[in-house]
Length: 195
Image 1: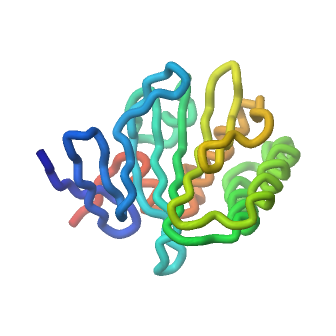
Image 2 (image 1 turned 90 degrees about the horizontal axis):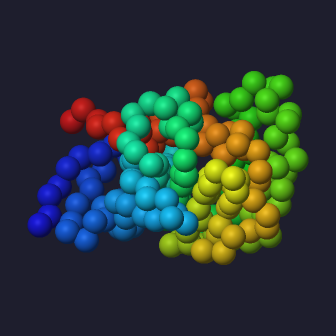
């Protein structure tokens, strides 16, 4: 059974919810639930990141339970995942720099300075991949007791980032007071757009 319902992405995006337990955002299948190393997670929201008029990627936020406020997402205990599927080819080093800048824009200087070594390591990770192509997926996972793992094309990169603040800082790229895309922020928080 297919039902169409509006969801905010960046402009109005329609998600087709099917019996398979997935939604479709700009041609990308986003699962409504997933298992992250024994932790059952649900899709909190998904949407499109736009840069000017161009679609850059589809992002989906997975949590242990639904949350409508950024503060609740950041404070929620348990496993979490941000999944990003590219909608266009992009220079991976440039994306790493944008993420670095996104964290910097959403944290006080004192908190940001503590995370610089991890952010530089993350930027280097993206530089090593050169280009992320249309359809490539990367995930940012938080597992209590393990840390933050970034995987590109299903392959974990390096050792996990142990600091809990690191995952929260990355989530602020999308959910912070100065998000990369306001409409994507609302979509990830499961908020609907007025028609």
